[in-house]
Length: 594
Image (cartoon, rainbow, N blue to C red):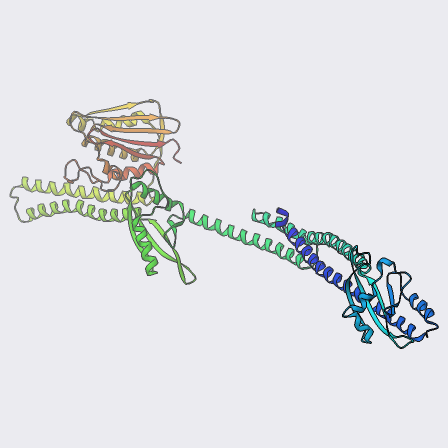
């Protein structure tokens, strides 16, 4: 079955069928032609023989009649028979005529057609079915009748006849020869057609194999060029196509890799949509955005095809209006700005591309700038208002005694010191954040260093009934750092711990070290920090006291300064707190800060 479906089988069968059909028609026509040709030749031969016999008989007188008959009978061949009729009683058969093959004279003289020969009409030819004398079988014979005038002046006739089986034998021989020739021609055609189809389709099979190899990605596959005809030109075109296809695929692959690299390295998320809103391409930031959004929907299984409704609204607007659309979405506490632009295929929109930008840091910085202005204004407004009020009291002589004036001046002086500290801390923080902090690194024995710092707070802790202790895991440790800056950090942490710990509580300074560096923890049993405030404790002007009352509250810059000092030492600071259970600040200083 596969052979007949192949090009070889189809071409071979087509050639064989066409040649066989032509040979069949030609054989039929040749058989018909030779059949008619033999009959016509036999007719013409018998007619000529009969005419010659009639002339011979007419030219011999009655004395030479027997000689004329002998001469005339010699003209009859062995396959034919002759009958000369002078009258119903005088007639002669050719010597080679058997009695069984003799035609009855009465039949010829009574027959409607042959009886006209005796009336001197034209020669009559007819194929008749005559019964033999012995009445055994019937035989078809070709009978030719030619009239002549006997020497006595009577109408006579010469009849020459031949059985059709002689002509049929000749026709059969010719038929066998024609059929044999047709059979040989078909066999030769079959071999030639198979050879020709195989020769033609051999390069086609090679091209088919090469095409499958190219379909598998082997673009270096080449078809051998065996000829310079159309098939050879096709092979040349196929090889050129393979080279061009390889070049185009390499170019597409490079462009794809370049596009993938660009998309992967982008900080912004990119989502490409089809016309119907189906996601075609995403990059890692966009996938993170979709995963966060899906997690925000409280679903258990992520579906990358799901898209936020806000994004789909912007997509529909961009497709319908053919204009760029901008929106903002909040997912997992982060702000994302989405820019959706339509994509065109010539003049038609084939989709849209969405650029998703994480604006959380920008929004945070905007909020920090706003909070900074508000906090500075608030921190400065209170001492300035107090200095203005007390100075007006002195100018307006509201304070009458010197003691009252000194008390008012003392308040003005304290507030000016507070303003000075605030301004200095702001300047220090600005220099640190600008990278202008200078460290004076020294070799420090940590045990006496930490005890010296904690002794400064023993009196304050005792006044507030707070236990301040130090735990040293290693007594002989030596580290390199800026002692003044680290003292500023520890002072801020211990002071905050004492101020936010109620009476009866405890503050513990723990030192642990290993081959990496020094770990310092300041633990208290105070009120703790609310969970929502923990991410912002190292921001400027952060205060646990939301009312911003004077007394235990500072400027809110201490932890921000401490973080910058630790970062300058290539360390890090962190906080762990649970409201109602206390707070732990952890500081790490590496051994090598160079």
